[in-house]
Figure 1 (cartoon, rainbow, N blue to C red):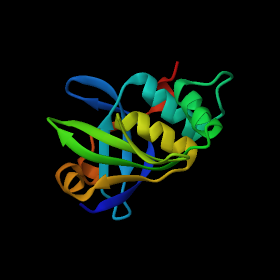
Figure 2: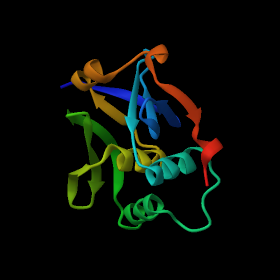
Figure 3: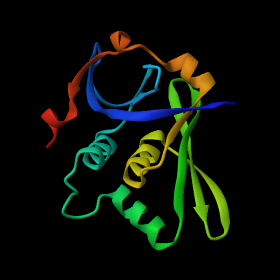
Figure 4: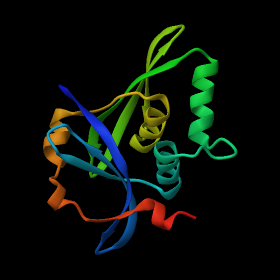
Length: 149
Protein backbone atom coordinates (compact mmCIF):
# COMPACT_ATOMS: atom_id res chain seq x y z
CA UNK A 1 0.00 0.00 0.00
CA UNK A 2 1.50 3.28 -1.09
CA UNK A 3 1.38 6.11 1.43
CA UNK A 4 0.63 9.63 0.17
CA UNK A 5 1.94 12.64 2.08
CA UNK A 6 -0.64 15.13 3.34
CA UNK A 7 -0.42 18.66 4.65
CA UNK A 8 -2.60 19.65 7.58
CA UNK A 9 -4.48 22.46 5.84
CA UNK A 10 -6.29 23.59 8.99
CA UNK A 11 -9.17 23.10 11.36
CA UNK A 12 -12.61 24.35 10.40
CA UNK A 13 -16.25 24.09 11.28
CA UNK A 14 -18.18 22.28 8.58
CA UNK A 15 -21.74 23.45 8.00
CA UNK A 16 -24.02 20.72 6.67
CA UNK A 17 -27.62 19.52 6.82
CA UNK A 18 -27.20 17.94 10.25
CA UNK A 19 -25.58 20.99 11.85
CA UNK A 20 -22.05 22.17 12.53
CA UNK A 21 -19.07 19.91 13.26
CA UNK A 22 -15.32 20.45 13.65
CA UNK A 23 -13.24 19.06 10.82
CA UNK A 24 -9.51 18.80 10.22
CA UNK A 25 -8.68 19.20 6.56
CA UNK A 26 -5.79 17.30 4.99
CA UNK A 27 -4.50 18.30 1.56
CA UNK A 28 -2.32 16.43 -0.92
CA UNK A 29 0.14 18.06 -3.29
CA UNK A 30 -2.27 17.45 -6.18
CA UNK A 31 -4.99 19.48 -4.41
CA UNK A 32 -7.15 16.63 -3.14
CA UNK A 33 -8.74 17.13 0.27
CA UNK A 34 -9.63 14.70 3.02
CA UNK A 35 -12.05 16.14 5.58
CA UNK A 36 -11.93 14.22 8.85
CA UNK A 37 -14.66 15.09 11.34
CA UNK A 38 -13.27 15.30 14.88
CA UNK A 39 -14.26 16.30 18.39
CA UNK A 40 -14.22 19.88 19.66
CA UNK A 41 -11.30 19.39 22.07
CA UNK A 42 -9.18 17.69 19.41
CA UNK A 43 -10.01 20.55 17.02
CA UNK A 44 -8.97 23.07 19.68
CA UNK A 45 -5.72 21.19 20.27
CA UNK A 46 -4.77 20.98 16.58
CA UNK A 47 -5.79 24.60 15.96
CA UNK A 48 -3.73 25.75 18.95
CA UNK A 49 -0.64 23.87 17.74
CA UNK A 50 -1.00 25.24 14.20
CA UNK A 51 -1.74 28.85 15.10
CA UNK A 52 -0.35 29.44 18.60
CA UNK A 53 0.25 30.92 20.97
CA UNK A 54 0.86 27.95 23.23
CA UNK A 55 -1.67 27.58 26.04
CA UNK A 56 -0.59 28.69 29.53
CA UNK A 57 -0.80 25.08 30.72
CA UNK A 58 -0.15 22.04 28.53
CA UNK A 59 -3.09 20.44 26.78
CA UNK A 60 -3.22 16.63 26.68
CA UNK A 61 -1.39 16.48 23.33
CA UNK A 62 1.29 18.87 24.62
CA UNK A 63 1.77 16.57 27.60
CA UNK A 64 2.11 13.51 25.37
CA UNK A 65 4.54 15.35 23.09
CA UNK A 66 6.64 16.46 26.06
CA UNK A 67 6.57 12.90 27.44
CA UNK A 68 7.86 11.47 24.17
CA UNK A 69 10.70 13.99 24.23
CA UNK A 70 11.55 13.26 27.88
CA UNK A 71 11.67 9.54 27.12
CA UNK A 72 13.94 10.04 24.12
CA UNK A 73 11.29 8.85 21.66
CA UNK A 74 10.57 10.49 18.32
CA UNK A 75 7.45 10.57 16.22
CA UNK A 76 8.55 9.39 12.79
CA UNK A 77 5.13 9.67 11.12
CA UNK A 78 1.39 9.34 11.42
CA UNK A 79 -0.35 7.04 8.95
CA UNK A 80 -4.07 7.09 8.27
CA UNK A 81 -4.26 3.50 7.24
CA UNK A 82 -7.86 2.33 7.23
CA UNK A 83 -11.47 3.40 7.17
CA UNK A 84 -14.48 1.44 8.36
CA UNK A 85 -18.04 2.71 7.95
CA UNK A 86 -16.82 6.30 7.63
CA UNK A 87 -14.50 6.10 10.66
CA UNK A 88 -10.79 6.63 9.96
CA UNK A 89 -8.07 4.73 11.83
CA UNK A 90 -4.44 5.73 12.19
CA UNK A 91 -1.08 4.56 13.48
CA UNK A 92 1.72 6.44 15.23
CA UNK A 93 5.18 5.31 14.16
CA UNK A 94 7.64 5.96 16.97
CA UNK A 95 11.43 5.68 17.13
CA UNK A 96 12.33 4.60 20.66
CA UNK A 97 15.33 3.31 22.58
CA UNK A 98 13.86 -0.18 22.38
CA UNK A 99 13.20 0.04 18.63
CA UNK A 100 10.45 1.08 16.27
CA UNK A 101 6.92 1.00 17.65
CA UNK A 102 3.56 1.27 15.90
CA UNK A 103 0.66 2.38 18.08
CA UNK A 104 -3.01 2.53 17.08
CA UNK A 105 -4.54 5.99 17.50
CA UNK A 106 -7.39 8.18 16.39
CA UNK A 107 -6.39 10.31 13.40
CA UNK A 108 -7.18 13.50 15.34
CA UNK A 109 -4.77 12.52 18.14
CA UNK A 110 -2.10 11.53 15.64
CA UNK A 111 -2.48 14.79 13.74
CA UNK A 112 -2.38 16.80 16.98
CA UNK A 113 0.96 15.16 17.79
CA UNK A 114 2.29 15.44 14.24
CA UNK A 115 1.81 19.21 14.13
CA UNK A 116 3.59 19.56 17.48
CA UNK A 117 6.50 17.33 16.46
CA UNK A 118 6.71 18.47 12.81
CA UNK A 119 6.15 14.87 11.75
CA UNK A 120 4.68 13.92 8.37
CA UNK A 121 1.12 12.69 7.96
CA UNK A 122 0.45 10.01 5.36
CA UNK A 123 -2.73 8.46 4.06
CA UNK A 124 -3.04 5.13 2.33
CA UNK A 125 -3.55 5.62 -1.42
CA UNK A 126 -6.61 3.34 -1.44
CA UNK A 127 -8.31 5.39 1.28
CA UNK A 128 -7.34 8.58 -0.49
CA UNK A 129 -8.93 7.44 -3.74
CA UNK A 130 -12.15 6.53 -1.86
CA UNK A 131 -12.35 9.59 0.39
CA UNK A 132 -10.65 12.56 -1.27
CA UNK A 133 -12.67 15.40 -2.71
CA UNK A 134 -11.85 18.52 -4.66
CA UNK A 135 -12.09 21.96 -3.04
CA UNK A 136 -15.52 22.63 -4.58
CA UNK A 137 -16.88 19.33 -3.17
CA UNK A 138 -16.10 20.26 0.43
CA UNK A 139 -18.96 21.23 2.72
CA UNK A 140 -19.27 24.90 3.64
CA UNK A 141 -16.34 25.66 5.95
CA UNK A 142 -15.99 28.40 8.56
CA UNK A 143 -12.82 29.39 10.34
CA UNK A 144 -12.53 27.52 13.62
CA UNK A 145 -10.99 30.54 15.34
CA UNK A 146 -14.25 32.48 14.90
CA UNK A 147 -16.00 30.08 17.26
CA UNK A 148 -13.30 29.29 19.81
CA UNK A 149 -14.27 29.64 23.42
